[in-house]
Length: 188
Image 1 (cartoon, one colour):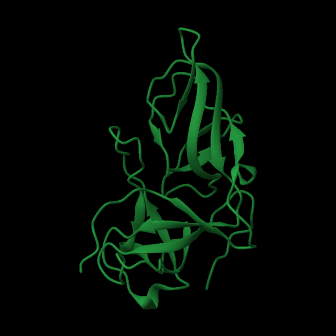
Image 2: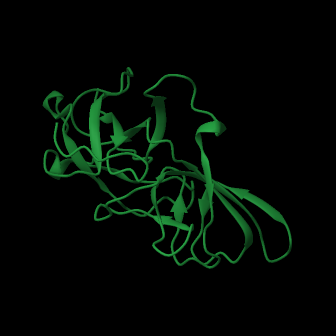
């Protein structure tokens, strides 16, 4: 059976040192009010250069902070809002973004093309696309075109699941290689 082409960004998979992935393995950060970009659950994020605020990451970035899990904030009406997506231009105060920032959490992510067993241990970059605003879920994928030459991610292996097989649109386990809180691995 062919793998479904349904990217949903980076989904926490396991902690490399053991234990559960819980809220204790998340950090809290700020998002600038009226930030002109949407950030969806499962998007790789980075720290803004001049503050503790975060923004959406791209393949050209060299230091990711982790993966966006959701946000809470006070809207202009004074209501406390909890969402798994920050919509572009949202005006808010008391913004708290939840981020899987532990550098030893691995993630499940889909290839944008065809993967192979020989990719295990190789580096690759992220394909940073716009998220699905209806579901509020990321559509980021592993960029298959630069396996072996990219550096954002380290491919650990195929996700063991009956609905996932090596080949087109396979889901793989990755570690964020260019993580702000851990040294970058430059080769296999």
